[in-house]
Image (cartoon, rainbow, N blue to C red; front, side, top):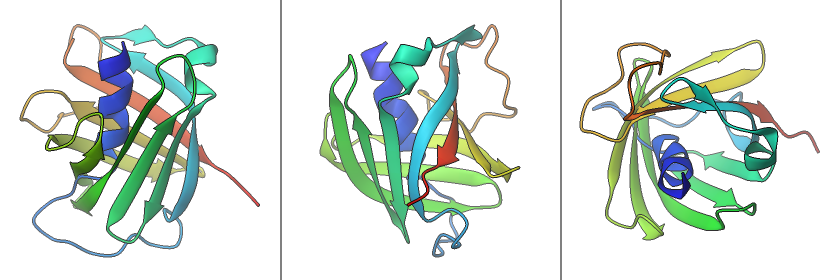
Amino acid sequence: MKQALIFIFICLAIGCSTTKKISNSLSGTWTAIRGEIGGKELPPVDLEKIKVILTDTSYTRIDEGRYKSFGKGVLKYGNNKMDFYEKEGDNSGKHVTAIYKFENEQLTICYDLGDNYPTSFETKSKPTLRLLVFKKQTK
């Protein structure tokens, strides 16, 4: 479970071959409000302490809850795909692929612990897929 939450944050930092700055709508601090692994919902207690900070082409992930994890790295994204390259933290040296969408003020990221980009935001019967939905923190 710890590994799953760690990779969720990593996925927020990964992108495609086209690198660009994160738009103002995605730049900021995001808190997880929903998540699932292999089709199973994560309990709220596991989500409320998960945060991701996105700034330009970098990310920081923090889990101050039960799993106590941290990571920082490079984020590349484009064409609704993300690539996370963790440079510091629990998964230093790892690359995670993901797809994302930004709708109704929520950022949804689905990542694969394998080497492939997910083809949908559905994790049921797909044990390597993780999905997190984030809400942006307001000041």
